[in-house]
Length: 83
Picture 1 (cartoon, rainbow, N blue to C red):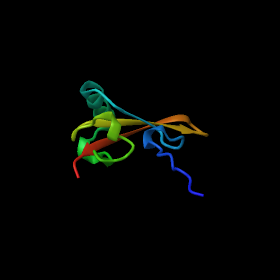
Picture 2 (spheres, rainbow, N blue to C red; picture 1 turned 90 degrees about the vertical axis):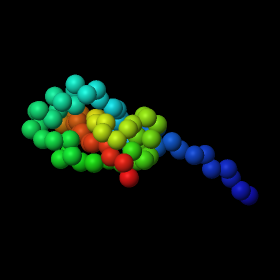
Picture 3 (cartoon, rainbow, N blue to C red; picture 1 turned 180 degrees about the vertical axis):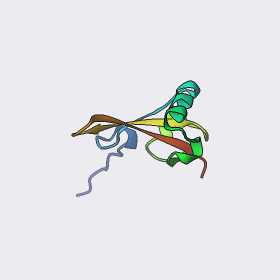
Picture 4 (cartoon, rainbow, N blue to C red; picture 1 turned 180 degrees about the horizontal axis):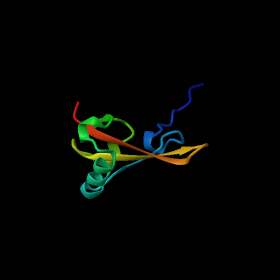
């Protein structure tokens, strides 16, 4: 008895936090706040399954909103690069 597998889109999965592209102005504010360059942030490939559907380009900054049992909600920023 064969069963048909239903594909799961990664961004819609319950364990994948919310990913969103931020504006250039907001990205500049983040870099100023943390006193860093974009390449000093953690990198994420444009082919990453979590962000494929967002239409990201190399050079975009991604804001990841994670749920935390201790902090409630935490923000994480990543810089997109090409493979």
